[in-house]
Image (tube, rainbow, N blue to C red):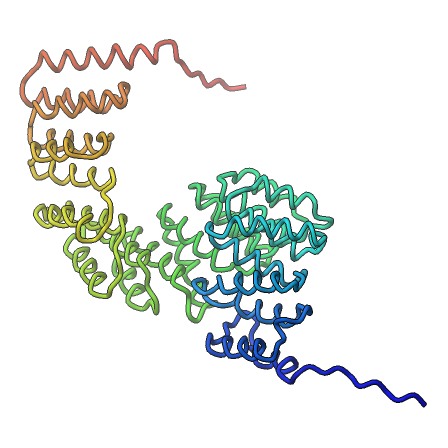
Length: 470
């Protein structure tokens, strides 16, 4: 009997590595120290220099689950494996593509990974093809995503979801809806994608209708769909529908994430239920700048200027960095409360102290505030110093102030700029005529009305509408 050949066995860490990297939940994150220790063990034992991709794939999976700031480690490990002639597989390549897709900085690398997939004949594997569709979708390149999609033998629900996401990111909601309609099967992500897509482009009623259909067909809304429909309810002022969604969140989410909390705060704040918004806000386990903005803007919209400032100061004390929306809300709050000096101080500190650039909307708010306070000349001087030309909101705020305080000369300047921007704006002619009438300048009233009839009346000549019964 021939002697048996000795079996080749690798050092124990090769077989124990899965135990070191094991987590009870698929989506859980491995503690970074434990991952680095496992990586070190595999390196010292020499397993990362073996042509077998098993060890590399295990580590790639673990690294890909780290928080976003540390995910580039996945790419470093993948590139290291290529240098060691470890072949990419249908499991390892999608991990690298997914991480590369998360940052525009790594997009050129992601394109090279597509070439690797072609060279290694890995595109027939659904995981690989789906990762590439998602890559192009995340970077708003729907045509490239479509080409990969069309080459797939049997696109699955993940393929369709990624393609729809790409169309929506590129502003092509109509094409996304066509794919949604022809999907052989859908999941909660499919519905959430189109609900969020409709919300993004302002088709709020349609988004709410899709959400209702989703629930009727037995799908459990994910966080994307819930956050989107809450935003739609806030924009529509649909408080009762929003309450229904809030109740669903309360029953189905023991600890709602920061996006859902923000959506609920925004709903009640925009609908004028400030006391409920404050209660929800205070109970949020985590808040980000969007949560603070939802409350601050809501308070400002409903005239709670002093409370707006109080929460702005609380925001700063808690170390949350304000953005342009924050300052817009604060300036609106100051305008409603007549806090002119406070608004001027905050406006002057935006860029120097907080590093937030002033935009036209901020200048428009200040023009309205100064106009209301009768500081017309100061408002015009501010507009002269603007880095860009004033828009209709800026000059409209000044014109409104002129109407309140009877400043005819400044009104003429503001009206001239507004009519240069839109010569057919009948509201400007009407306001200017009203200002002349208040000053008893009747010849000017007649001149402005005649000019309005000539410019706007001529445009409407020959237009008629008839409704007939059949």
